[in-house]
Length: 492
Ligand code: GLN
Image (cartoon, rainbow, N blue to C red; front, side):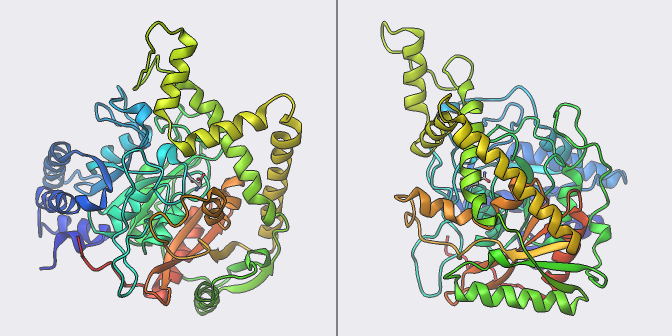
């Protein structure tokens, strides 16, 4: 039999149901894979004892015929989700040693469905970044390498631990959060699937806040079916999150048929940017052909404010971040640096100077600036207005089509350190993902092809509010035609 770590989540479920292996065996094999892959630095905390006790509970539930949707499935949890009694740092030094006294709603739901937590996954500090290089605990190394090269590559970000762990077959799926692309871009960089649902679909309660009007939990997994299974388990109304949507959650995996007859797929012309990577452009054209083969009608649409999305995002997100991160003052959580004989203000300043990394400080400064009395109207208020125009662009496009098909990221994965000196070059990674985030729409990346260097590229589907089912189904149709079967060869 093939290694259990090679199975997809759906195959693991089938194997468990058929008693081909136990949840304990499945989890144990993953624990060993995690231990053998420490060079990737994907995990900040490993929790094998928790995983095994959850596996034993799943085995009992399976035997009793009471298994939940994810009984015995080994998952990784992005370290932005608070987990009761397990250190949660958001990859920041300022939260070192913080053990939440409560469980996030999303992880509570996943564990309630029977999942086993292998550990907490590395990310960019407070989810700010596109390469997982801003983590205070070191970068994550992608399991992928370009053909004939040993140069270390980034796994994307901010959910870089999640993408690397799923791509390296260390866990069946992982949670992610997406504020401007942090599920979709790392999924694209590592040849896996990732979905960010509609804003409000999954609860933000217990998720460490970055930019609250944009943050949305979601999932990274090997394929569309696996994403559908995990998304179903983690979605749903939560009275503890004031922006949670009270709408029924469909049985996503059961709704995957891949028949796109009667569906209109829009190609936004503004996403055809100058100097676009030739491999990516060719892949996007292939995606159009696959959608046609599946029965869809292709229409060209316009999203006129696409160019403004990135600058708008990089005003709104830092503004909210500067406010959210004001709570880290050395009094309530984690790190405290109190200079001898200093005042309370000295302690705040010293703690924040020591506890936050350079990117987080940059965002706090930008955010404070755009919210300051003299500049509020010129920047923050203007950005809010442009954000409304971006949402309106999508609403108008969705009069002519049901879904949008675009690339996920402008290039494949880049080398470690290649963009760390130039924040703008780093921010440009998000050019195709931030518009859907600003509009709160469900969006998904699927692995669709390889660059000429043998690195994965993703295609993105964007849907109407709450139409995760439509997004997943179209992704399923494209996935079947793309036939993406590449996996990183094991060098670790
Ligand atoms: N790369 C984007 C940023 O740095 C998006 C991050 C995210 O979605 N969390 O803000």
